[in-house]
Every structure is written in C-alpha cells, then in structure tokens.
Length: 387
View 1: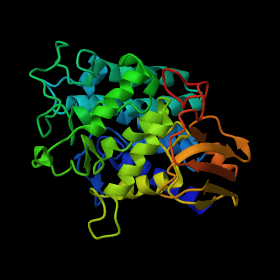
View 2 (view 1 turned 45 degrees about the vertical axis):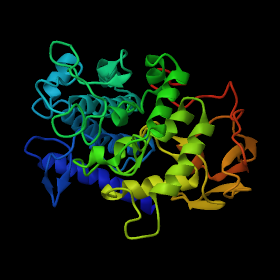
View 3 (view 1 turned 180 degrees about the horizontal axis):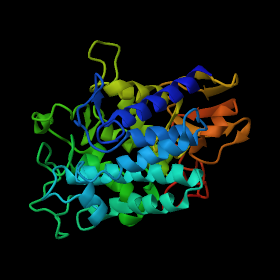
C-alpha cells in the first residue's frame, strides 16, 4: 500500500499548505515551502480530484473539496474575478489570458468530477458550467484559441506563431495551446466541424517546418517537431488526441517519432526541463502503451507499447501485465488488443481494470490497422459525450 500512502501524504501536504496560506489557497508553485506564483492555473486541484476518484481517501474529503473551491474562487489571483464574471480572462486586464482561461476550465472540470462523486450536485453543476469556458476563447474563424478583451472582441493583430511574455499564452503559442481541452475532446472536435477537421489541423502542427530560431527568446519551448514542443507540458497530450478522437493508428505513428527524437541515454537526453518528473512520467506511461490524458477521468488513452513485456506490481498485491507480441522496429503498429483474453474494442483502458490485475496484450503489425478498434468502438470520456 506504499504508493497509496504516498498519494495520501501528498494530498495531506497540499491541504496543510492551504490551511497555512494567508490566502487559504492550495499551492500553485511552491519552492522551499514558499509560494512563488510563477505558474498559472490551480493545478493542486486535479491532483486531489484524481486521487479521490481513484479511491484514495486518507484525508478529509469535505475539507479537500472546500479547499479546491476556495482556490478556484479567489478573485485577486490571475484574472479569476474576471473569469468568474465573464467566462474568460480578458487580455486587456490580465496577461497570457487564453492560457489561463483554458487551464482554469480544466481544473474546474476536475472539481466538478469530484463533487459529482461526493454527491455535491450544486458544486458539480457550478463547475461543469465553468469547465465549458474553453469555448469562450475558441475562434471559429481561425480555428485557434485566442484571448478576448473585456468587450468580447479578440485581440488584434493576431499571429499564431507569437509567443512570449505579454502574448495570449504562457510558455507557448496558438499552435501549442489551441488543443488544451483534455476534458472535452468531443466538444473540441465539434467546434472544428468534426474529428476529421480537428485531426487535419493536428497534422499541420506536427508536419510544419519551423525554424527553431523563432523560439530563441523562449527557453521553455524546446523539443520541436513542427510546432509540437515536447520539451514543455502543454504539448504532452497532443499526440494522444488522434486516438481520443477515433484514429489511434495516427497516435501510434506520432509517438514513434517523439520517442525516437526526444529521449536519449545522455546527460542532455531530455528535450526539456523534467519539471518534477513530467518528462520522465510521459516516457514511462508511453513506453507501457497508455497515457492519462485527462487526470480525474480514470481513463488512460492507449498509444502503442515500446516494451515487449512489462508488469505493474499493484499496491493491492495484484499484477497487471502488458505484452506486445511481435514488437520490433519493423512492427510498430497495433493490429489488435485483448484485455484478459477478450478483444479490446476501444482505445482506452480504465483505472479499475488495471487495479483489478490481469493482462493487456497487443499484437503488433508492420502497417497501421485503421480498422482497430472498430467504427463503433466506445470513445474515451469527454465532457460533451461522457459515455
């Protein structure tokens, strides 16, 4: 039970920090016990929500939910007062407003998920409404997420390549931040006119030819594949969007290039700052064959395995194994998959399926199998389509 105890300890520490905070806020980006405010969002919130939804409950859940709501309601922080009033952060009053709106919306969704699980329908309804605020910064005319001004107009002039302090985005640009809706991929696809249109735009992200000098002024934007920047977290879910939107073979192809080009056993073998382990965590999950694209969904999007066999020794004493039959450099695509011997006809697995123990087996192929998991396969959770 060591890993569950560690998670409980983390949540307890976050709540202790919130009680000690002069503002009664959960930590944003603490360093040596002191809040630095150097990042955006209130991302202690999804950490707690994800733990609760996974059944990790060694803390006062009601106190935790109250702390989460308090952190999401502190008006002086990062344009939150305007966000609560307008449904977006206005760029003429707060910098990096598009990124802040998107990240607040994801965190709000995780509050709603935990509130629903606790039977707090009032809080769930409030934060489900806020979780849809990403739509307020989507510009259908350009297909990008953009910052609005208080009067509702998008800020102009607009160049999706622009990044840096004072822009619409935090450590990124429109090409990198416009896909940050992991809680509602179905809604994002609908906003683009369908999954095909969304994924065509993602192709433009990966296939673009970009001069790295365009980001010489931004030390956080590294590990470029086209506009995709693996060296920083806002891009880390993007390759998995293909699978979440119904075309997992395209995720498999993108992951192969990312793993080959962004990691190496050298002192400079990471494409960016490991940032408390995120670069490494992405690698470990991806090597196993699945990734938690939307923490608090209790689902993992299947990518493709990079190991022939791996076993997770679970805290409940059970084991969960991943086997990739036929995996080699010439066979990088998933032909089929089974879970505990039964055909897996969806491109995700659930947390409870892993914790139950068992075996996830992939049969690998030379060419993409566009027929797996099937035209009628169940799609991963999405706020607009939570089946």
